[in-house]
Each structure stands twice: as C-alpha cells, then as structure tokens.
Length: 460
Image 1 (spheres, rainbow, N blue to C red):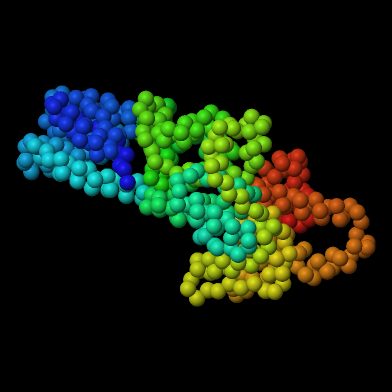
Image 2: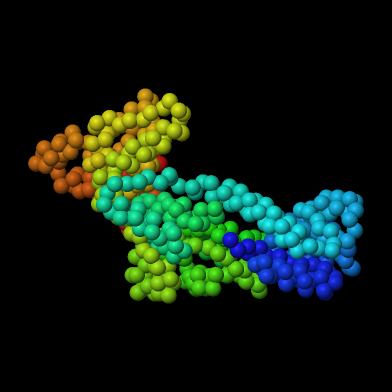
C-alpha cells in the first residue's frame, strides 16, 4: 500500500535536503523542504504535515527548539531528528522535547526508510484509535443475512462490488439498513485494514461542512487554533460513508466532485493539496434524479456517485425477513443483559408484529424490541411491552375492528383513528422527531400533540 504521509525535510545544508527529498519522493512520500527551523515553523503552521525530518543543529532555530514550539501550539506533527553528534545528551533532549526518535548522520537510505515506516505505522494506529473513539456511537447494528429474494440479490451485489473500488450509491427509505450494507461492502473489500468512517451529511452545520470534510490549517477561520484532519484524510486507504448525501449544499457538491475526480483534498486555509485514497459509499432516502431535475443536486456528481446502485426495498415489501430480524434483535438485546438472559415473544405479540406494516422499517423494529427488552420483567415480551401503535394489530383487536365496522362508532371517531395512525407513521419516518413530523404534515406542533393526546398516545 502506497504511503501518503506528508513529510517536511528541514536542514540548512542544501545538498542533504535534495538527497532526502529525492529519496523520499521515490519511496512514495509527499515531501516538502525548509531551509531552517524558522522557515519550518512557518510552513508547519500553514500546512498539515504528518512528519518532520529535521536536523538538530541549525542557525536561527535549532531542531529541538522547533519541536518545543510546535508542541506548544498543540499540533500532533511527529518529529524524527537528525544529528551528527551521537551523544546521549542530544538524544535525550530531543526526546524530552517531544521527538519520536533520532537518526545519526551520515544517513543510510535503509535506516531512514525503515524508521519512517515504523513511525508511519505508529501514527496510523494513533489516528485509527482516535477515529474509532469518535465513531464508536455510530457503529450500527451487526450485519444480519436475510432470506427474501430481494435481499439475497442485494447480498450478491455487495459481494461483487466489494472487490472493486467503484463508488456505490445505496438508496432506500429511512431505516432500511443502508449503513449496515455500507459496512458490509467495506468488510468484504481489500480496504478492511483501513477505517470505515461514517458521516451524516445532514447532521453537520453547513458552515462547518468544508472543514469536517477536508480539514483546516491553523488560523483558517475564527476558532481554528490548531490543524484539523478532515474526514477524507481519516478514511485514507479505507471507506468514507456519506449518509444522507442529498443534504449536501451545492457548493460542497462541487468540492466533493473534485475530490472524486482528482483524488486529492485541500484543507480550508491551505494552498497545498493532499492525495487521498478513499472509497466512497453514499446513501440517500431521497430521489436524486428528481433533485437533479429541480437543480438541487448536481447531475455530474450524481453520475459520479451512481457508478453502482443498490436499492433496498422497504420491510413491508419483504415480510419474510421480519421473522429473521426478530430473532436477530432479540438475541442481540439478550447479549447486552448477560450470558443467561433469553428474550422471547408471546404469540399475541409476535402476531401483532407480523401484522404491522413498520413504516420505520428495520430501525423501527430494532427500537421497538430494544424498548420491550427493557420493559419486560421475565424475559417474555408481551403485547403490553411493545409500542402502543401495535395494540390495534393484535389478532383480537383486528377481529374486533372487523366486527365493529357497523357499530355505533361514528365517522368522526373513525377518521380520528386513521389520522393518528398517519401521524405515528410520519413520526417514525422522522426518527421520532415530532417537530419535523408536524412540519411535514402541515400542522402546528401543539396540534400534533393534541391529536395524539386525544388518542391516549403518551408524550415522549
């Protein structure tokens, strides 16, 4: 795997700089050079260098002072020092200042490249640990193989496209498991050793999007007090999952298209581009073709993303998968409570689940069972442990409903039942966001709460 570390070579002797720059460039590194410590400090503040290969003895500012100044700025740039004075005092001073290691002049090519490879591995592990902590809450559910013909076809598509580097666009309603399938693509690819970095394009404030995607240099804008690596750099040699890609504003769509075409990013405030090797998997619950016609999504970006398309059908179109999902989520929830815990469903609860149409798809099923697992006292999940909306889908309730078609309930009462059902479906589609649901339905939030209260649906 080709290394894309950004290296700054610092030495006051031009001949040494030229030799090192040539050697490292041929080895696949992106290399720049500085003539002394002050020149290096200015470049480090403006550019996102991963590593500095610096001489210790230099005029104006020594290499050790350079390390101290960079550490004082809070930057995590690593240092590998060079010295012609093989004394333990010099080595200890460099290490105390914050350098990773040092090399003794005259330098041997094999020693330099080996040490850089070691340091590169350490830095990648540090980046991976940092990124994994950041995305720990977004790891998603474990992949669950499903038996419906539609999902079997998708499974075959995933296995085929995973072995390539093609960009993939996953479509489907909210909650159908697009992120789970994106992870499956990454897990089956040759990029498994790299990171899978998910980002919800609709959850990042628009003014921060460019910085989050591409990073920024120190001083790029108010509050940018240190260099930040963007998501593309974090996902280098791995997979970047762009969820809700339809939420990207047009000016970011242009920049994303450039990255897909040129395979390089430029941090905010920097004039330097950095090469990245990232596989893009995007997902959306919107109709991007319609957005293209309306002018809210770029046609060229759509075609660039839609190299390989996977559409996940809603759960209501593949009811045979529901049984598998029930067993999967019950087992997953039981594992959270301990080795000896087992959850099961009463016949009435299972029948209601199978009769319900699950507008929130797989996510709604998972949330309902997770809630029920907390409420049940004996591990047996009954109808009362499930969301109230499922009560009307129990066999007895359905039978009573059919018998009461000509009962005394008037039209207004029956219309209220239908209205509440529609409201609950939209709330599920909005992942529980009742304010957004009210906006979609064209009613005020207070009206939505009042209608739910009349139907004895609790406020959450």
